[in-house]
Length: 102
Ligand SMILES: [Zn+2]
Ligand SMILES: [Zn+2]
Image 1 (tube, protein in one colour):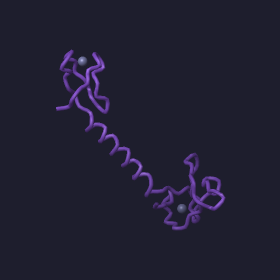
Image 2 (cartoon, helix red, strand yellow):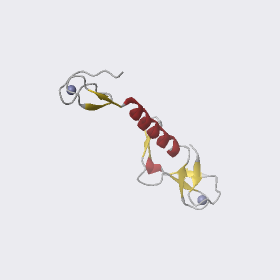
Image 3 (cartoon, rainbow, N blue to C red):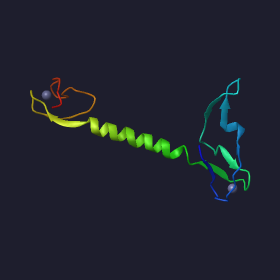
């Protein structure tokens, strides 16, 4: 987590908006929402953004996309000779034959 003021005023103190943070009866952090800024800069009152969280989420998504692309490949069905784009599903959509990636 790396909070910065969205107005770049240089303020280093931030306040978590209570309504945005959900905790259980023991005070354990449960969840937060992004419908409104979760933190405000105590110096100028602007919403603060978390530079530590957003890029990590985007990176995880990019990695998931990459993995999906690598797993998929085009092979020719040996039975009906349909070109099949195979991902996790290893069956010809045309004739239902099981397919093997060479
Ligand atoms: Zn500020
Ligand atoms: Zn087939």
